[in-house]
Length: 88
Image (cartoon, rainbow, N blue to C red; front, side):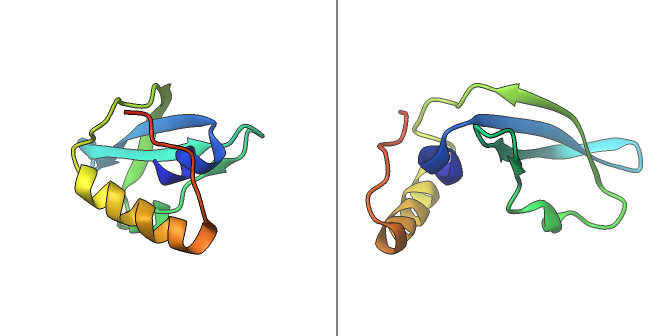
């Protein structure tokens, strides 16, 4: 969500599968240039696959992990400066 705050673009979500069973979802960004930016793809174990990717609207805040989002946002602002306000 922080990447989306800074650069805009599309949010993508896909299903995480292992051995034919779904094990959750994975989110990443497509920048306005069309480049897909996934900063956490390395978290998946050998054999896990992200499938059925689709563009989704940014969920309205506050998010499920709102406190963690705000903490990360504060830390990014300390390094980069002002960010656009989050969509809530």
